[in-house]
Length: 302
Image (cartoon, rainbow, N blue to C red; front, side):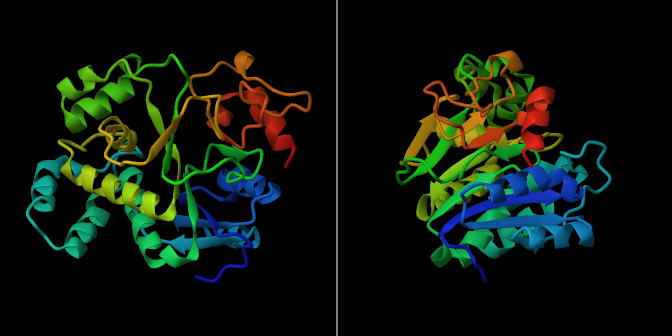
């Protein structure tokens, strides 16, 4: 991989469909921050003009192919209805290459992105030290996403404090289908961690990605499952499958997960920047676009 970055930090994201405007706030706000690492965007179904604009912004574009196969909902795949068969094949002792090849064909993009990341980092382990796995449509950077007090391991971020899994039909659906109703009921009072923002040093993020892929292959059911990678993400956290995990409450770290917040409760400083409870500027605003006034104010800076 050729890069002109001045640090060994890496941001990884996936974009399927859409044009440059879809991802412009993510790309431009990151470029305008003090971030001097590398940004790699896996793209599928993106027009050539948008790809050229991404490259002009310093993004490394990695094309791949993904098809929704005519599914009515963009987060679902018809082929996943045969999940019992695919799960049996995944557990049948196939060589790793064969399992990963099947996963590329079967997994919806929400799951497959971890496979893409894992294979990329396997090829570029020596090129980077720290990695941020990010959604791209609904993230805005107020500062360098790596400019905080790091330590080794994988860093998870809770959704808004007080929001519990039992109050969310999506989490009930994901965890009950993937790991059984009893598992969900045992952990229904927990605050969920969001899978759209995950940090880690190279060794630990690779372990996390391998676990995401392997746990997805063992899940009880992935059919008709929108956004279910968050169920896998929380299963890994709940079961402490990675020894070195740090978890942050919302409003107390480099990421603010905003979906369950109220716009009137979003704290800002005198300059209008969104801040944590301690007054520090939040580097990464996730799901900021749910709030029209905040979105307009942030985008006006671009």
